[in-house]
Image (cartoon, rainbow, N blue to C red; front, side):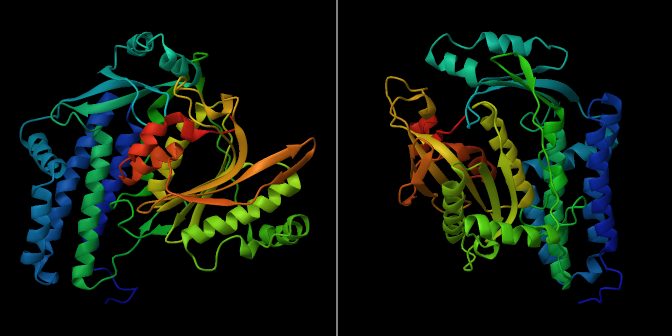
Length: 439
């Protein structure tokens, strides 16, 4: 293993991978300038190939290189995207430019699932979203869509021979796979593989969390997306407020927290480090706060390896806003490599009415009010804690906590999709009734 002050013997490979990262951002910045985007994205594709060339030129320092590298070559040979990248580089250098075209994708979002109608047309045909809206049926489903739905309009660059991938995202994915190769090369030499570093925050992550992609390469489509509220035809723009908390602030808040709620900050997360135990200790804290204040905000917690890595308050103004917020949270799950998510807050619950399949729990005459915390994980069953809220005038109290393992939690569908998990059939059957809320 090399001394930390010595130059890494694979520094040339690392530098070329960093060059690719820089070129990717140049293409991202030029997304709405066709000529600049063409130059930047094709340069990035060419650099993709040179990463492996430089790696091969350093074969003498990599033990058992031929056998080791053959395994990677086979992985890339059977990978359609990496094969396309290789062919694209050859075409750029020997035949000319790729046949990339700019498209507008319009889709209707009226669910936590990506099941709404979509249309993708050349960018100049801006009437496509209008035609999509006209296609909404005049039935119960159509009424739900018009009340709670959003038209999402997104600019996309597509190459003729790679129609299933947005081009910038395809290069980001290829970067991730090369990043895994380079990390494995370091391990083969006996060097530390090195973490992936978020250059904006300085936070470090193991390379395998996002298949090698950097956090800045995930969720980039938001910058070229416009969401329009169907009910009003007004664009939707969410305000995101980030606050940095100093250690001194936490020390000052601790005594106030303990005095008002009888809550100790060091007891909010479980000593065991298990996500289900975190769920229980957080819910115990939520109960104390609710019984003191008479309400509880909606909070999302993201965890990785049993440790919290992110939390945010969610403040949707309309029910349909939650469809977008959960998609945004799913981007954050991927970016941070989170393997568990908890959402906690007040909610409505009601039995499903087969005669009103699109009726939300909040609109049901049989609704009940709950304080709920739900945990979903990358591999396990969901766990939900709930306590029925009892109100008598200004007095409020909670029934005993109930715990349920499994069940339908439709709200988390975007996060399941981000993890590559299938949406359980029982979630599909429950639909919107499983997503009761206060909005």
